[in-house]
Amino acid sequence: MLLATAACSKDTTVYPSLGIRPAESIGFAEPEVKTVVARPDPALDSDIARYEGRRVAVAAGFAKASVSAERSARAARGKPVGSEAWLTAQTDLAQLDDWRAQASLLVTDIERRATDRAAKLEPAYPALDSVRERAQADSDRIGETIGRIQATLPAA
Image (cartoon, rainbow, N blue to C red; front, top):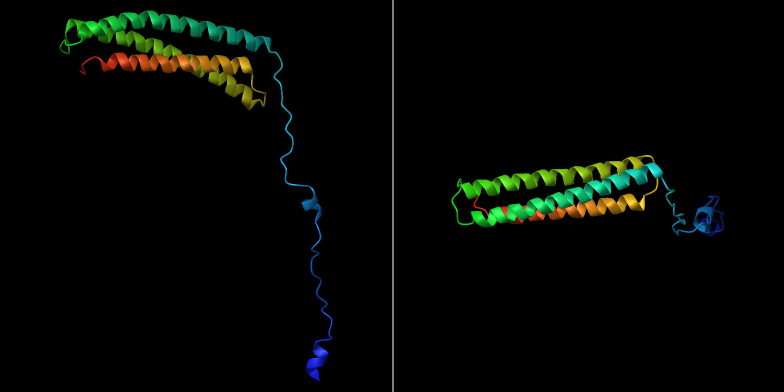
């Protein structure tokens, strides 16, 4: 008899509903992000023009110096380390390193300016990004050219 009455007892525990909760009705889609367009900035445009001028000057100076360095390196091929031709080629390579340092400094200056904008939560400025990409490409090309010329000379 005891068993029969136990089956008729009511469970008084409250269980959570299996219905949709408010948080589940919102959805899981990413919210739409509004694209922020950078406003024209005359001061930044002036700096970008200055950066571009420096970039062009460094590229032209390096191009001229690299012709001389390649000529010196060709003249030094087969010559012993310490010979006059080898020393001339090393001197010309040192001048190329100066151009590489200038190119690297320019990239650093541009990136610092972009980082300062980002720190102020300002949107990306396409002209600044573009000049940075060109300056970085020039810097990479300069490094590759120096490495190629240096590889043709005997190591000290």
